[in-house]
Image 1 (tube, each protein chain N blue to C red):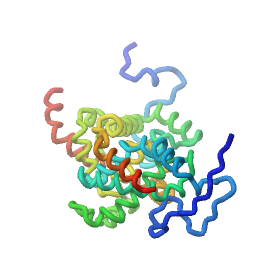
Image 2 (spheres, one colour; image 1 turned 120 degrees about the vertical axis):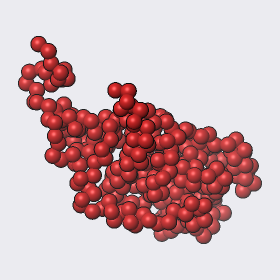
Image 3 (spheres, rainbow over the protein chains, first blue to last red; image 1 turned 120 degrees about the horizontal axis):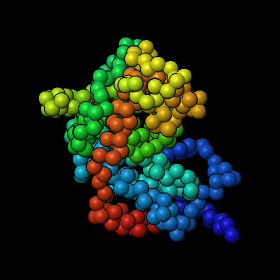
Image 4 (spheres, chains in turn purple, red; image 1 turned 135 degrees about the horizontal axis):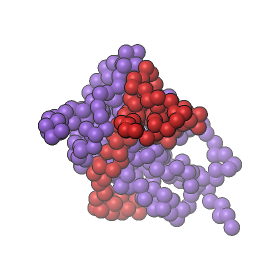
Length: 226
Length: 96
């Protein structure tokens, strides 16, 4: 038997609406989403059953973004507290992981990027311009062979990934490490799918250049052995 | 008869193996779509055909696959510290 959630009188304060996934202040709860008024018991149930199972992925994402354990701790904690406060804007049974990742990414941009120890000086503009040019698109296939990267260890891959500008690093984490679809990534990042695709393409070219540097620094060994 | 060609190219009726690709940038984009599971059936068929007859594309495919696997399998996965899980849970309980 379906339980009809009672309407909560203590609706959450809406002081940071812009951080809310899919929040639209003008949006009225539609008939098929009786979501907005969970009871306390339901809130805890959703939190424990749908949000907490993603905590390791969230922690990894936070750590890859901030490259710092303390910052990752703070970011994950802030995100989960925010998620609980605004749980009424989450529709039970929908994509909790994408919803949580979106809050985390917004919190990172709003709170952490500014005070980051290694400020992500937005040289992103430069990178974007460079890689947007026709030349970069057409001739940019990195000269690297599968065999040369197969010996790389996790640390080297991590260092290469961390050296990418944060927007490029993010799409690779979301796609290759967390396995989100392009559509989910578009929602998490608030960008069109076409931009997801092209940013991912550029990010991978940058990553391969970094990997090539590692591979070639140990490449002399392989050549001597052959 | 001795042959150095890979088996797939030696069977009759197959196109010859191309040693040079004129549209590798486009092929690379397609290859990434496939590995990401985002290609349409039509794109899948086209790339599959290409991957049987174009050596540079085969190599690109292998590289992209290898790099993706490095990221999925070889990167260290950290677990969220238990202390943090406990803190979050107790903070949540004090909310209502």
